[in-house]
Image (cartoon, rainbow over all chains, first blue to last red; front, side, top):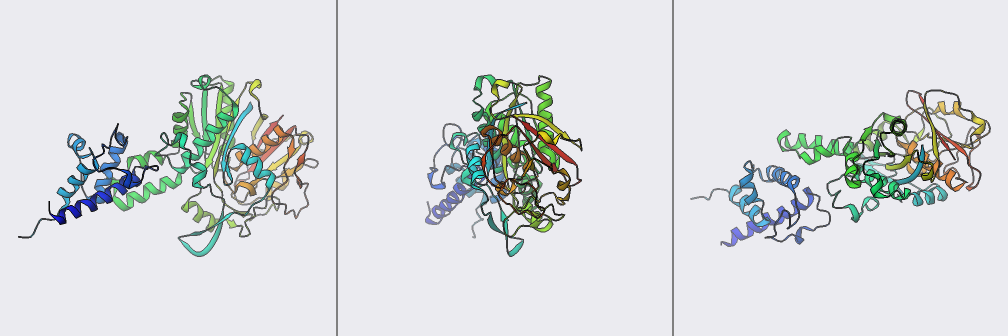
Length: 97
Length: 357
């Protein structure tokens, strides 16, 4: 993986963790406490269906991304890593030839 | 109906013992805040601190709750706990009535701001669900696992009195055995701005309940008070609410030990209170402890209930007394059988809550 790509992914991850803590009112959790590959729902971080709706709103507001298909959403919302990958792939600028 | 438990959240802390302590201690300076829309000017405020509404025991169930709902939930929980009523007794027989003048307006304005900032399609549904008046009542029912009737009453400055009348009706018709009835109001940036522009803010930090002024001094406050009430005399821990009247019915003043005036500067002209002064009984007003609030009568009632329970007369926290009325000047033990709490709304309609031993 390119160094630049790694940096961009890390930036998204950091921003995403902060947004999750703020927007989902996770008062007892610090952004750095959330592991990159930690499962977000149920037995993992303990998020629920209302949080899933908040994540949809969060992606729209902050990254301009829409998640309409909930089957696709289940895979995307699995962990911070999967969310980061989705954001990276759908917001990266086309490379100049 | 009898008061069996009281829970309270106010600027000086949480719990009925904290309130008793504050009433004994007397007036304390309010916080001073600067409004973003009125720079370089400070306004007095009695806010409820974040730490007061932090309770790890219920943080899971109230994770998404805003300050408005959290204050109501904690006060309601504390009222139930104070009553010693067993959990298994209350599930289907407990009614919940929340009184509020303005509801969760801080969240309502946040939701409206989000529509302006992000458009209708990008607003949070969770925020919307918390922006409605009934949010706090729902949280209380959910946290207490209550399946009894639950409602929110709002009638500007007489919301609490209306809630009491309704709880009396519910108990009378057997709709439930116990009612958690109380009030909650919040003071956010919008309300602070409105108060700063429309009311005469007390820059010395003192609400003066006995000046009976057409332009009285105000210091906005916020908080929540809940009472567990029932018809069960065995559960009476404080006193009974003998009567709630709206209108101008005559009161037999010879029986009354103290008349508490809920004059706090929030509803404008207070000259009408002079017409309600008894000739013999003591006069009191405790708004300088918790601040100016449309639902301040609930706090005044809590003070009255404490006075009857503890057979004590609290000194008025601010004693400016230009008309030389018979105010309580010193806190001391005294026989307390009957206390009335009077509130006038901005249309000069009078409401009286009568507490009796």
